Image (cartoon, rainbow, N blue to C red):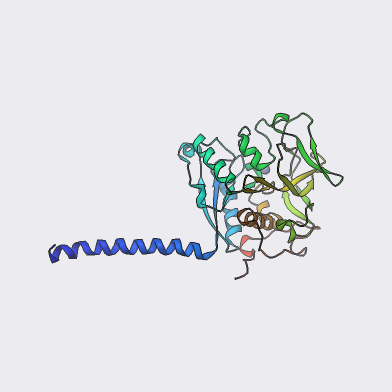
Length: 307
Ligand SMILES: [Zn+2]
């Protein structure tokens, strides 16, 4: 090679080497950062996902603990939606829409079964009424034609979980209200750092959800005033194979997502789903009271303590 050719080629080689180094560094940094990798799925929902997803992202990012990627699966993108789920510690669903391809569904089931993890927020539990495995993962769901064939109504009564096989539609709600959340499982990592009762910001409260409810723990309930008048599950955990699932019915809109109840439980629930533990500092009843529904800007969310 002539010198003039070397001069032409060398900058290219240099560029390739540099890019390679940058890629390596990024991978290494991610590994060392100790961040939890999250894939947020949205793009279709009967709720305002366009406004809600950014609030969820800001909530998690404010803590400094989560690295979030977003897959926006609009109707025209469903056919090509085929992510490598295994790249993420946890999948965060804000999706209530068209069926994914059979290949993507089976990849997802395999991922969760083998120890992948999932967080389901509000109307994501309306999705996929007839995808059996998905309904096993989320425990309970509503709408989409759900009825007694999809599983019992599951709620809390006299200190116990009731599985009610009576017939009827799955999923309804009364008028929006500030609702009191009662923690029922006080020693779970998610609820351990929460007050035992607190108020969530005004929003609709799901009731009459139905589903298989297998391997499901109800962490907290709320009385559906003006709705079913039952103590309905609000925070749940489910295990599916090796996978951990956190299901919250909170989070109807971008305003109620500023409720401190929503924020604190989303952060703790997502960390738990991803890692099996919660290291986020406890929240006091001054910050998350029961006598008023506290909200705050996402920029006022505390970060995780430095290691
Ligand atoms: Zn809603």
